[in-house]
View 1: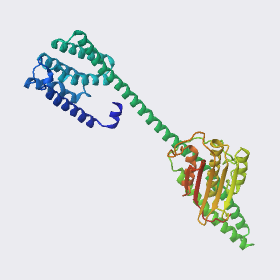
View 2 (view 1 turned 60 degrees about the horizontal axis):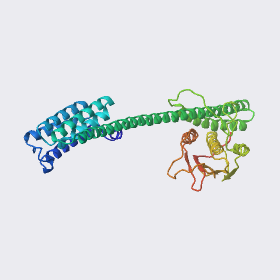
View 3 (view 1 turned 120 degrees about the vertical axis):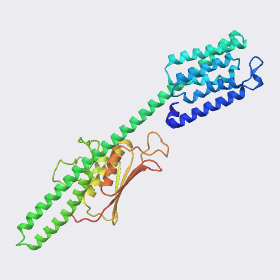
View 4 (view 1 turned 90 degrees about the vertical axis):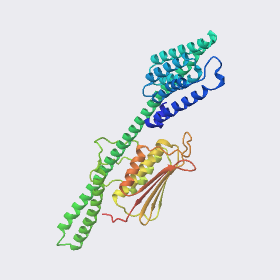
Length: 409
């Protein structure tokens, strides 16, 4: 019943009940003319057909008014028997009405209805001259079975509804956790970008003061300082645009958690110090090795200065990927490959760890907060992040970022 309510709507359920009522009526009319009814029961005539319709037609509304439908169907069945028509012909209608009452109403009304069906069955047996023990056995067993199945359906429906509510609650909680994780990571990125911008502004301030000081005495030096100011200001404007885009969210205030990361350069501790970049991956690798995970660091292509925001994004993604190796795959061997392309920076972090329990190949990795943070960083800089299990075991994280050459300030 619970599964049925979830899979079909009210209109479809009503059409199903109408179909059942019509089918029961047609079958009962056809059975009323069969010779198996015995000599003690008369064949159905117009009155019998009318009573048959009265027994079965109300079943179309059995879900809306189960007690009323049961009362009408049972009363019509009693009249059907009282006019010497074969009781078996219309026995299914009251039994279905009893099942519906037991599945939709408390157990006390269901028990009363079961007792009434049993009493009607005893009345039909006595009119047919059946042995009393057999009549009472049938009057007890059949209603009890119908009532029991109805109660079981009601319990199953409640359980299914409860499970559906829990599943929806879990989905809401998962969405809330994801939103909170994204908001926390965005705030963390914004603070880091703020430090990058503060560093750039300090460079602009120093270069501007020097250009003003040597403007007359050393024009070449002043022009070089102005060029540096121009390049740095363009870069800081780009970082500001990213920061404003990032901060246009509905996230609430909160605190971030930078624990369990193999790095001690938390943002904000040194306001005018550049954020970590690719040049510090060696230091990170040493810390990870000290934590018990061997790390190989490879560089492909010719290293070149990149925008600080790009380097910070790459650094944090490698940091999170190696943190996951320490947490979930130790002991394992990790490999970090930094590839400098003409227009793109590609970083791949892989490990050969074996999961503690095997999972089917079609089960995707869990989208934890770390993965959410990495994807947010990649998206912020127009990059892509691919995460997944490797065919031979272990895990792979691949980051691709657009990386135009950048003149160091």
